[in-house]
Image 1: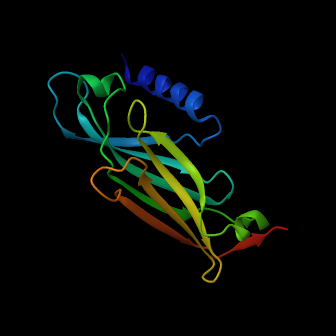
Image 2: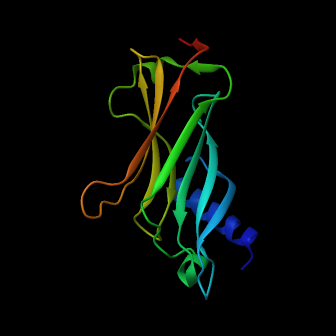
Length: 162
């Protein structure tokens, strides 16, 4: 199966499973371990724009398991992920986002195993500091707390919508 075919299958499965979830654009990857049969283990870098806040883009790096299972999309990836988000244009904050309380809002979700494990990104708004906070984590708990990372976007020029 070619890399393009694998990507198309992954995108189709993500669309079927998650409907309106944001799909990331793969920017690149590096191999981290050679695997004799199937794809190598690697770290993938993906980009996505916040679907409700134009002017914010995020880059996510995460581990991708190779081997035969990884080649067919049935391997379970590790919970390792990192995120960096930046202001890339004028930010328009709606009243809905400004009023969102401590539970945040999911802006990205992608499967990292066949059934139950996903990497997610949740957005929070810190009104006191005029800052957006993006948290990435794995939603399957294994031996305690999930691994996580945050990135903040200090809003420097914005439009507050009613």
